Image 1 (cartoon, rainbow, N blue to C red):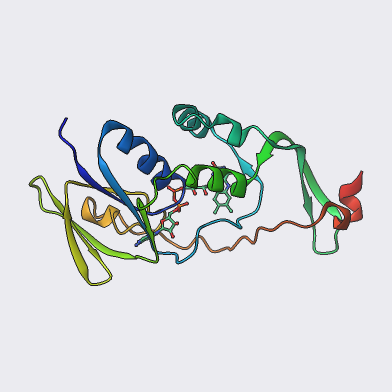
Image 2: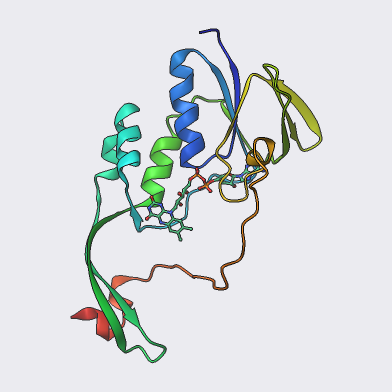
Length: 186
Ligand SMILES: Cc1cc2nc3c(=O)[nH]c(=O)nc-3n(C[C@H](O)[C@H](O)[C@H](O)COP(=O)(O)OP(=O)(O)OC[C@H]3O[C@@H](n4cnc5c(N)ncnc54)[C@H](O)[C@@H]3O)c2cc1C
């Protein structure tokens, strides 16, 4: 296969994996991430799925998902802190940061650009896609959309880009173990 100019939109796991694997086949790959900072600091509590372990195995970094905290159940507390439900849910919760930072460190220097938002991707049905980032235009062979829920890349290939507000918001956080509510101490 000839060497392709590949540009990846999004610098979280999907984008990082593409940016690590494709250069191994000789392709020229750069990742564009809209965030101006590296994406650490997301905390802990990621439940690894089979796909994650498969790709980590392919890039030779399975150990990044082997350290975690064993959880045995999920507990629901009401507004007064009383237990309103418990479900058995044995799971190993791994660290976002260990995973992200370990995978990110495998990127070749110069293969990612932070603070660059892709506004639009055009698939012109010949060999090249065009990509518009912050006013600039770039013509490449392949654009990989790893830009998550509100993907601009998806809009180049499908009209199914709408998603609807489900009517609720979930806040997710971590607290020090010593500060957990008394109901969660048993
Ligand atoms: C609260 C919560 C808990 C979750 N828990 C789990 C779990 O336990 N296990 C699990 O497997 N999955 C979990 N998920 C799902 C998991 O986070 C996603 O499946 C995963 O992050 C998708 O990775 P991605 O790289 O495809 O996209 P994303 O993580 O969405 O990353 C997209 C990246 O693209 C960047 N970007 C977006 N638009 C642009 C643009 N126009 N230009 C440039 N950059 C752009 C974003 O800044 C972001 O960095 C959870 C999700 C949430 C919200």
